[in-house]
Each structure stands twice: as structure tokens, then as C-alpha cells.
Image 1: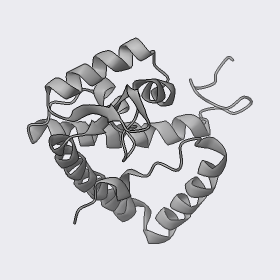
Image 2: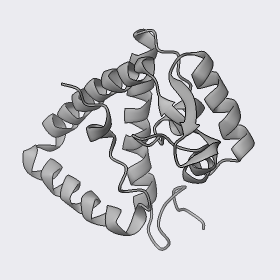
Image 3: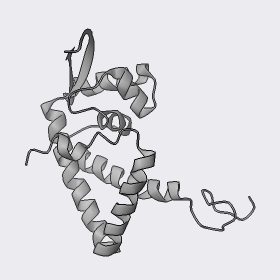
Image 4: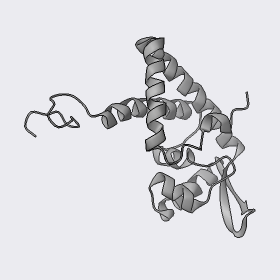
Length: 165
């Protein structure tokens, strides 16, 4: 690849590919959220957060969380155990199948979600101030359209799940 920047598109120099350009700001927001949660007394690790954010409003089975997070059931079970001990989630019987259990967000987890949503709003406001209203709206529109072909879980929307105010 001589002379190309890591992550650059073939045939270009120093031009990062779209996937990396999408990941870099996501990672910055993710770090801001985790730092703020830690400062507020919510001790959630990155690995735990990546499982936690995939819990459906009505609860999720470990197998579904593992598939969504692209992790093994054993790994997700371990992370859910940690989240449960910390009070962020609870396990309840699945009303559709008495043999199965659902992982649900507990009140402490819902409070952490609310705290994280405030940080997300702050970061988006900073980005809007930097990019301007028009570019931010265009970016949101383009990414929303792209989601149609990239997000198999788009029915899950955290903004409506635990928004109590």
C-alpha cells in the first residue's frame, strides 16, 4: 500500500475510509459518556456498556444480546452477571417461555441511561456548534438513510426507551 495512511481508501493518500470516519466521532462520544458516567458514580466498563445498550425495552435473552453484540453467550452471561451485581440490570422470567429468563434494565440502569443521554445531547450540541446547523442536519439525514442498509437492529431506539422527562 506504499504511502497510504492506515484506514485510507485504495488509490487515495491520507483519505480515511468512511467506516473509520464514522467510528472516530462515535468513539469520542462513547468515551465522553463513559467518563461522565464514571464521574457520576456509575461504574460501567466499555464491554458492559456495549452489551447494556442492546437490551430491548421489554427485556432481552442472553442469546439475543450475544448475537447483537457479536459476542459469545458465555461472555455476555459474564458481563450481565457483573451488571446485575452492580444493580444495572435484573433477570426476570420470560412470559413467553417459562424456561427462559430475560435481562431487563433495572432502575439504576435507567438512571444511568438518563445520565448518558444528557452527555450525548451535550456532545451533539458541541458538534453542531462546530459544523453548523446545516451540515449537522445533512450529516444526520445521510446517516439516517445509510442506517436503512447497515442496521439490522434499527427497531431498537434508546431515545424512546427510558426517556421519562
